[in-house]
Image 1 (cartoon, one colour):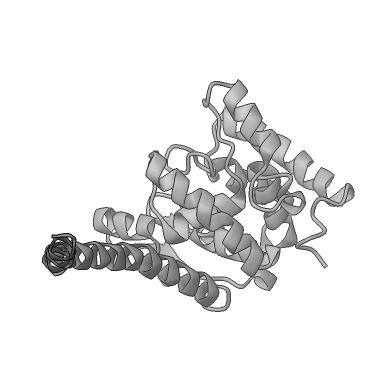
Image 2 (cartoon, rainbow, N blue to C red):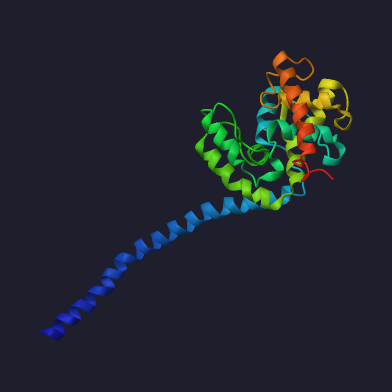
Length: 247
């Protein structure tokens, strides 16, 4: 009897295995596609970060959206060396004064933003580059999470000068206007290399709200902000906070 029971149990194992095989196969299939869904976008992001470290991004999501509204965009990619140093310092002073001192996130600015009830931004220039080049505008936890994940990679692969060069060429500085070269020509009829300290500060003063602020016809508020930015640009040059992007 014991031998018969053992044989019966042994015979039932193949039956159970036949029932489990489709389940196991399904689980393997699900795992394989989940890995693909994770690894393929990750590989694409890494490839783009590497590519754009040496190749200029041809278009951004914001440019695409603005093209749909205004048609032809006003943009003219300009190498970092062809920009007046004062305009670079002005933008850094306005948007991210500690740019040379962080690795992508300014924790002090983030804390200040939280203390202010999120009424002011805490994003660094590096984060804004990631948002502009690889992601999209708007506030969502998904975008912010992706931005937080990609920013350290950009900081690790790109130089500080490259981050600034890309930002100064893709940042929106007016309706359908992108980059400081286009801003300089649109507002002051000069090239970015010929901007004065005052003109550079006025352009930088419009960056938080480029569609509602004008560098050519500044409001009192923009004038006051430009004056503060001009002082800030001189300060970061004097105290060494511009050393990472200036010779």
